[in-house]
Image 1 (cartoon, rainbow, N blue to C red):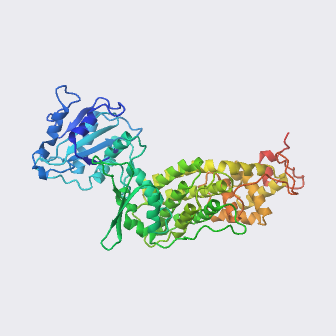
Image 2 (tube, rainbow, N blue to C red):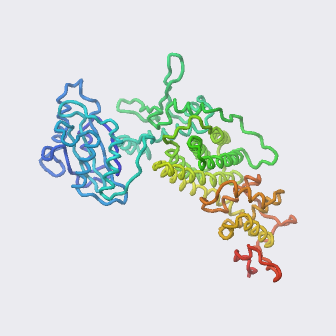
Image 3 (cartoon, one colour):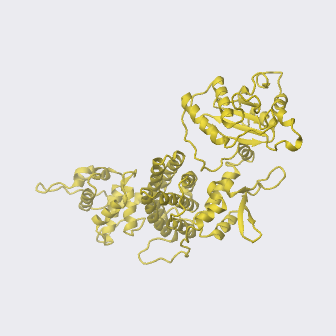
Length: 582
């Protein structure tokens, strides 16, 4: 059950919308379910003789009784209360009880207070009601509604439990302010898919991702095309900022400005400076290719970021809460950087992942003394390297990074869940789903090429690598050898051996780096770890036989062991190795 409190200035305008057909004819049977005094409030929905003007005048009477200079400019209190999708439909009597409890909990009209504010509850749909009150009491005073949103949320959690509804996650006052109903209505009229507040929040967040200093942040912000207005002190120092979306204006034709703190708690200038002043990040220009390095700048930046992300995952599994909280902020910046520079095939999913994870970067655990420069530098490097292609080494390196980012966000889910951060854990879980979808898209081409290369390996070579897996990962060998990615893993071990690595030692290093229990596909994770650790290419070229000739396009055939020798682990587990292809 979700309450959403806002204030306004036009009682009649709000009631006209609530009793009207809706923007898409979605309002059905608008009527009162409860009011400050049953029988006194006219109901234009059920009483043919009642009018919206009469209901407005009754609600506004205490406001109009005040001298004009004492009337509050925003005198209308509006609180839609909606049940969660899948909940049963409440009766009018149940919604009436909900309404009374909400206005009591928020201080609008406490039980037994005869001088409380006037209010009504209008229902025009099965799943929600609208509470409308005027913010002047019968005695001319203002209601005590401090933290009314938090108190409404707390009361809704109690109602959910008592009514047998879904119990939603409790808030902790670290979430970004949600758009008001007026903002959403304005966005719909303008044909926008999101409100200016949401667009601005994402733009500011992306401008901050990996910024090396305040000047770079404001420069990036201006490059987005937003209106930016800095607040300058007499000393010449910048003490604040606000942004506006071009074309978004109020009734007077003026830009609608939002300060950073109104977009999100961590986007105020003092909070931004706290993040930027935590320590300098690597601001060197992108390097020329060094011996042994693979790919262009986007690919190299993603390889570097993969290693740093793995360290962030380790921090989230450790005992230092401050360090973990700082790494979460860095992970958010890294996701923003990857989303901004992603190829078109994954940009939408990565953008959704970054938006979801934004909620997971904030909690009440402070990270003032923690150091997240490494992961912020990785985000900076990705931004500086520019957009990645969806193919070749760029595409493979992107898949490499996304495979690790899935594990990092899963670690974030666990970290928040262990500390009771329900909303943050849910947000991180949403990011996991979007990252998995993006990874599947990014990994399709490089993984298919590696699987094809692995299938072309001679059977004795595949058997030897299967035995290596069995010796190095005994508890999971059966599962690994049956995963679709086994062929790609075999090809990767073969490439590592050709490059001069000991396949068993490199595989052991990859396994010991981090646990594999949270991986959907163990083979995929191992493939990318091996390729990063062994500095192998993230893509493969058409396979060639060991003597330099092209390998024949046939599936590898197993060599049956002699009776005197025990069968290899691969021959026991892989059906394709049990008999020749016919």
